[in-house]
Length: 431
Image (cartoon, rainbow, N blue to C red; front, side):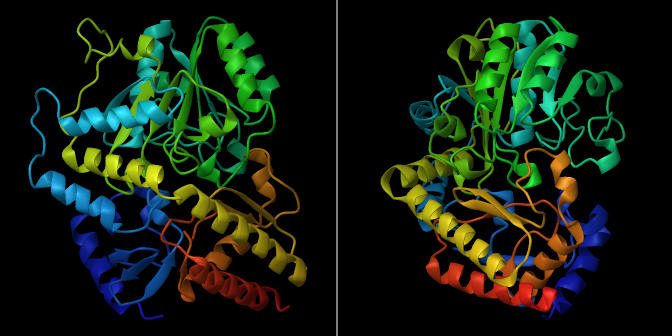
């Protein structure tokens, strides 16, 4: 695979930005400078074409440059943009659609990134309860801010220990964030008991997609709801990834568990920048966008026409076309046929997934939490992905990353992918 132009442009990029990239996980090998995306495909500066399963970490549920969404954004920008006072018709309609579909969303506020949304949700929970501490789960990612930037992709010897994710974090923020084990209700109950009257909220990815795909075991999410109710804490579902991708109502609709607050982003606008925090009206009214509210919420670009128009168009597409039926069918096929390939070749692995997402852990059992993932053969996992990239199949070449199907993928792309997967696995194992 030719990478000459990407290599040259990478050196140019490094002159103007540290590392040449503008988000921490983009500096991966092999490095590409991407120049175009269309449907299920992305193209780099050397003309290499890839079937894209990275999907920018999940936003592209409809596919790159989906015409209906793009045209609605262009149409909106031909008449409106942002004003800094009042509201726009687009903000009203986008918020209305979310309240129609997402069970917990009685009211909605727009931000620009998932990190902003989780920051505001946690601050609101602290304002409502008057408590400082919160619970998150080992391996889960909820953004870059001090409230939650600890115990994400921890080294194995740091699991459950004090593991801040960055220099410069406030010590108080680190220590007020308590870390529990996913799928372990006893651990959560013990943490509540050890911190009685001090915990404001639990924040959780209902499916921990930061570490691939770990499914909640029966009763786990329901148990968190009960523990929050019993202890006067709020339950926050971080559905920045799961929201709209797994159902138009979010994973909470699938699970039948309604949180107090929900954060959303990514698939809600098919790649355009917008995020949201939503929840029960009695809680959302505490934001100072409501006169008399005492929890600060602001942002110059909140509710910009680009994001709100894209959000409306994306949800309209889900309302009017069989988006989830299509991507779920392809996801089921992908997972089933990968399992068939692994069985034929006698390779030990666990194919995890839900709906349009999947990943193949090279281990001999279903992982239930981050600790279990120590058994995944990380070297094999990453090498496998790099070899697929060489064959035009783009999966993020990092350990413990999920893959995404979009409405633009078809059985043709799945056929090509499965053939490449079998070829690569044969090459790597000599079978």
